[in-house]
Length: 346
Length: 105
Image (cartoon, rainbow over all chains, first blue to last red; front, side, top):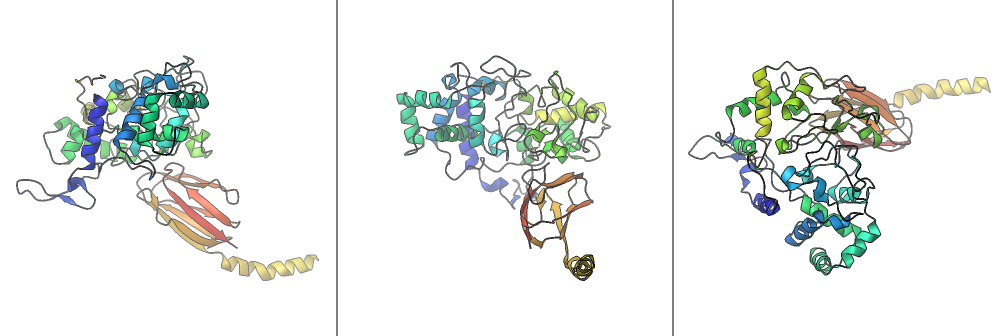
């Protein structure tokens, strides 16, 4: 099962020898000179709150909750309904539909590597995964759950009683332990061993020549300048920018982060997503404006649309056809699972 | 009364002006170089962007609300803190950039 593979990867990651440790050099094999550690490599699993350290019981409970549609108001929508493992832990739709069946306001972000995020959601309204976990659960247009009914359902289940008892001894079945379990599980959904990462660790054959050129375009302030926001090591600055994505629906402009923090620069600004596993999570941007990575590149080539409060970082780019193709090849090297393989959902 | 007031201002104002200080905080590697500074009422803090990308500085503090907009590398924006209090200062673009300006009487 893919999730088990992910969890195993997490455990392995936690025990990775210090070839990627801080302030160390990688001693290349076969007597080659030491190579400075790449700033783009991720060291180990995501951090966690002191009262929610990962363990197998919390993982098992969180997994069961994540896939359980009975938590929702109509008993049909699970977290995994929109964060589907076989669709990059997002969905392929422009806008998901929750319990009422109406489209949501924004595209579903992937939960891959969300444990590394310093702030959650497109608009950053939750500071942690523990906070975030209860948001969609209770939102009327998403899972539409009634908290008291959720707790009653869990308490009534021998399975859940047993699992909560093992995962959070003495803490009971509460919204807090429910959120902690979901957060603990999401911290195991990580992608940090991509072909790009293997290349950064020294395997020159891990990615194509085109991908290598694309990474140079990505970093170059005079060409792609993508790394100004998609910074190392998670390909995000954990920040908020208005990148000139036009609205697609007649629902008025989405204020984005400005609705949370009323500072002018944040009007229409959304969180910079990380890029690992990016080719598995189409469509792109907060409103699914771009259907492909090629369309994403074209959006940036144009410097974004002329929308109010466009970030001054957005400038038209002069890239050749080859450079555009190289950028896409580079982004595709950030997938842990080769694109041609369909992950099992068993 | 007016003469007394003017005389008082003439006496106090230069003294108060002389007491106002200038402080500098830099923004580098998506961090403020100081996490906490103590200043006096009337002091000015200059926030200099040394990163290759835009930064903002703001506070939603009731006592010292301000928004310095966004500005690029090499530029600086200043704010004068005119009321006492503990002021949480952040970059709106990069919310992990935080510091505290403690403004004392």
